[in-house]
Length: 400
Image (tube, rainbow, N blue to C red):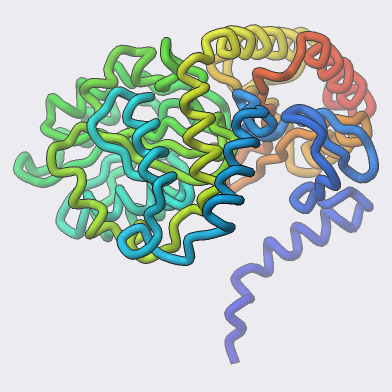
């Protein structure tokens, strides 16, 4: 009899081989307590956090935390219902209002996670006879949105403007087309040439969706992302984002100026058929979003951190995912999974947590140590981090 789990045997074997060396499981770390956006206790030891997506450090903001406590007292712990039934509270409307104001757009729709925002919007907007043209390095939630909607998927080479144009030229002129791009790609931390890509998409009659999960709050004059920074935000049809990065809580959203946008609330399955976010979560999100509107000092400090860490790691001899810092993500490329896991553990022993990313989630089968900086990291902490990388790099032989 066939075992439905047999398809996972190679991965089970790879994991057992890795753990048999006595290494800590890099995908099962427990944070026993969290002291701040940048420090936690892991394995009983004070650890600097360089692997969270807490870009703007909002998780411990006193106003944000208080808003959550007040909502918990006033509205209870959950809505126990869908947004289209009993699951829309005053807080959900206020959260959507904050998003409309933040992006200066007409419509905002809040989902229970960022994953569901991509899943819902992509699968609802592009259906069976439509085409989705997407970057080959797109996030899993984008691919899953394509699969759920059953659209024709047309991938193109990462950040390649000519490849995008070639794909669009081959498609029937009258067909429905959605080009899906990301502002910042989360694996290498590189930025898309949205200014050129959006123009190409529009020239070929396609709608454009940009996932700004890793750029919201930080990139752009008002923190609206790469589309704002590159001057094309008005030509983008849908912007997808998440609350689990710069906003510092959980949830997802889509903002748009499309005149028919509101009908999506009735036809988008991942929105209709799931419980809405708890009142405390939307209260923290709305408060955080409103504070991010005035976050220019934090944005400037985060850029300083990014430049300092990128330059320091390069100087130590590490191979990085980008030549220059392009975002708050700095990817350190490892020779293979074994070396990457050893380096990850050595850093943990030094008192530093980073993300270990492995194939198939990574581009070109790379093993990466992904560093995500926070606006709350001090200049001193960045120097401390560089010292930890140097010690771990030498002890594992990753640098000479």
